[in-house]
Image (cartoon, helix red, strand yellow):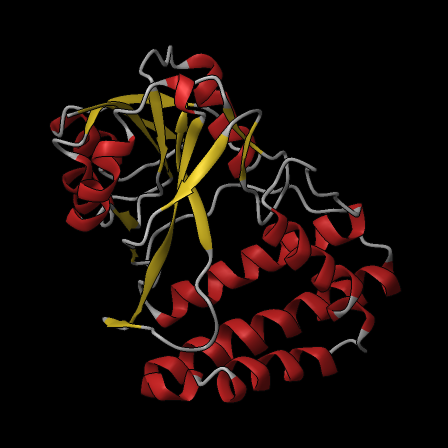
Length: 286
């Protein structure tokens, strides 16, 4: 078992939490579930698995996680950032094991990996590179960017190791939930765009380049038209259609509907000067 604390953020995650906790059992020596007001069986499940349970009002994912780092008495050498709908696979744990034994003097302070995203039970393999996430970092060296969306883990020193093994991401619960989630994310992105959030200079260069491309190229295209372009690029040119109907559903909703919704909310904000919405935690119910 690694000298590692897993931190899981939750809000009504009784469906996802058991599999997530099972995936870190025997891998993390401590598990802390930080909840933002569940009224289902999330707390009971966490405690039944031997996890510690804490409550903190939701402001953003970044602030919620950073609150856990500051207030949950983390004393292990390593910290794992994992969501309730994510799973540590056996391959990931096996590849991480020797890395977690490296001393601080090695300069290795983080481990990043990509996800296999599941849609309607099918792993999606096309439509562009999967996002890489710095999931594990040394205690006291990593922190989450204070951003409303697309927040990454930042190391104040040292370097990360990129492993080949992938974790599983079961983000999809139903079409209705996925639509609600995209609407919630669209609000966050609009607030981030209007607030012109900057990238942390310590981030991986590829992340900074992606953000620059998004702000410097994508958002220069006309509203609504750019959503159509994003869908064609992912679904056609990056072969998203090869994932069949689950691929069609995912790319239409994420690459077109979501991006169109962001533009619609930006258009609304420009026309009405609507005040910024206060974000609450996403309710994970179906």
